[in-house]
Image 1 (tube, rainbow, N blue to C red):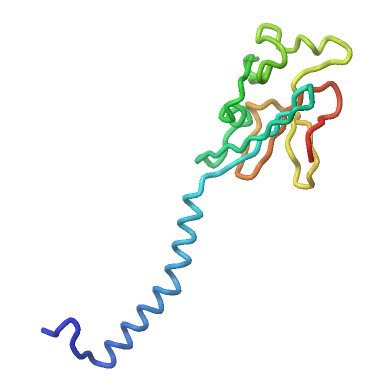
Image 2 (image 1 turned 90 degrees about the horizontal axis):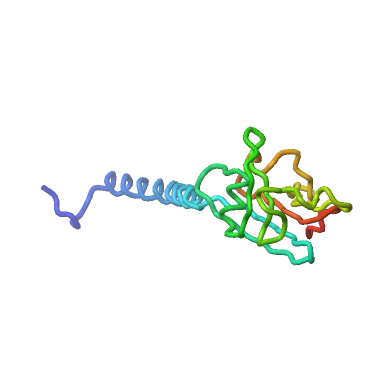
Length: 158
């Protein structure tokens, strides 16, 4: 039996050095990959009220994706929603601005027609009006959604 800290053969010393170098090369890559895997996903949310006030939220999530409705709910904003069956969920009011659930688009019958418009921030920095409701949109890490109480342009900041 050999001593733990006694004299070792040159072959053993070379093998130990090779193992240490291999670990030094592999361990940092493994640690950075595992740390990145532990970071939660996140998405942004911008809400513009009719008076021009803009609220910005960052919502973290552990799932690979969530819906736009999940993003809005998890932001903590006060919401009034209406379920339209197979068409999904409509946003009637945010933070008290908008319409009651029983008449979700009450201001859309007037001229100008106000309601909560739903947008996503495109890679080129422009806001694009969404052709689907928030319960149908899939949000992934890095996405940004916008809501604007407007009868025209989004008014959302670029």
